[in-house]
Length: 214
Image 1 (tube, one colour):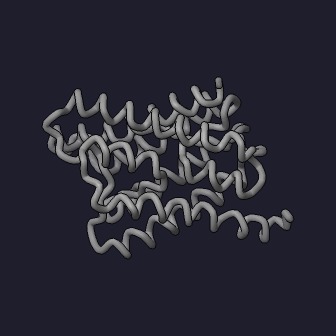
Image 2: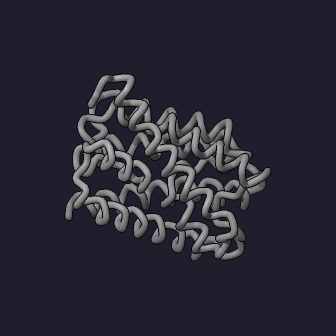
């Protein structure tokens, strides 16, 4: 149960701070800036890994939990509990942000700036790289060690920095589901469910091949 609570808190923090930065940037006419939003996502991920990584692994992402299960580095029986905890934390954050900023239309929901196919491919590749880094620096399914949080936070930040304006750089179904439901903008949600899961799962056999892990 401590693992599930840790995942709930960590994913709450991710969505509250990350999408909160997007909302506040919009509400203040760009004071936070795009770079500030990207840095916020990277920093909150890094902070949660260092604070919760030794408890639950700080997956904070259903796609990551699914990929770890496929890699046989995370017990399949814990997967439903992790995903429920992550979604619950994300939804709590989005509905609190909706209460705080009722006039905001999207509440930080991820939306493609171009075509759906363009954003799907971008999200798949972004999540592939993210998962490749995560599975490489994680111990078992837990992101531990001095540099794990820094490496993963840096990847999230840099991917949000360059790809965010086009696809939103979600890389995380929970991060996209929550603001989509809270703002009731579900029209492109399938991209942010399918692409991150596909990208994370694809990273597993590539990592196994590169590291010769059977």
